Length: 449
Image 1 (cartoon, helix red, strand yellow):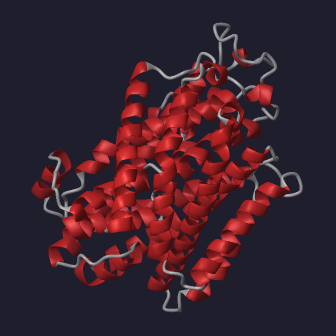
Image 2 (cartoon, rainbow, N blue to C red; image 1 turned 135 degrees about the vertical axis):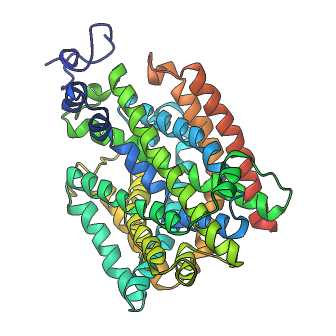
Image 3 (cartoon, rainbow, N blue to C red; image 1 turned 45 degrees about the horizontal axis):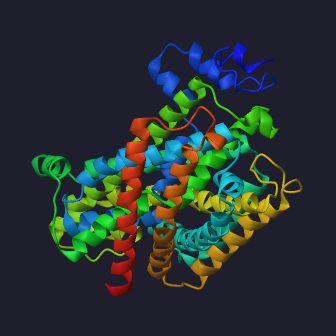
């Protein structure tokens, strides 16, 4: 049945006439309740937003609050339109081209794809190792057993979910894991912050020439707008298309106005959720650790431990639960994004929709990246050093990759009539410039700081 019977019209002739109907579109159109309609829309955007708040990001937000109080809350408002624009462009690239980001780069900008993918794999593997260690440490906060005991079962469980779980199951598990991050909103409420100071920190940007303060602003931007999310978002849109029967490239190419509209809603919801969580962590640690003078926070688990005597067991437990949920969500996204990048760059079959026998290289990358990450955690390689190195690699690749995202999303050969509008281009290019400056700052402060 042609797509136009359900989700498009004859005014969109660029869509394949043999394109399978998207049942989700019909459900969304039929739903009259706005809240229920939003829940039906939620998908890759929500998962991407939740995975943005991984343990390394949570550690950065905790450092910002512990070291500077409420002075960096305003950054979450500034970053929201930036990260939303970037992730929506990546979603649109996946929906319109029918390919993941690495596949599109290989076709239209082939010289760029391999350096980007190499940096992506190294950074993601290091980050996954640090996150696995953080999950084990967070479990240790709840269960008084040495953290190293949990590293292997956590790693093997994550591998098992990706290798043996269906895409539908994985998507549902990821959505439920995203709810764990609500714990941070609860932790902020338990912290009993000074509302007047919170509003001032939120609405009045604080600018200081202190290198430490500038460094944390750069780190906030770097941990929020991350290259692995670009690859993941585009590829997940392709996975969604494949899951409804659009298995051939020609069937996936092109997107109706309605599909792009609910992709935007999904992306906006995910990014708002991500920034609310970031805001809550800064608020909670600013109201407790900063006030108590405990500014030497090196990780999210440090923050949870330090909160226990200040805000009570409930706040510390909430932080630990959120850390476990965010880590179990983030590690598969990190290794999955690496696998999408590698397999698309080499033209191999990929996708969580496929069995391991149908996409062996894809799952080999996932398994290898997770096992190397597990080894990093077991050998107790300094997790902060691993995160710093991954941050530098992400900094090196983020700005050039954003330039490529902007070029692709304005390339008519790739996007047809679905190129960016003026507003999206303005926000996108401003974000690219800001991230470029921040990346240089991050690298300089890491090397010389």
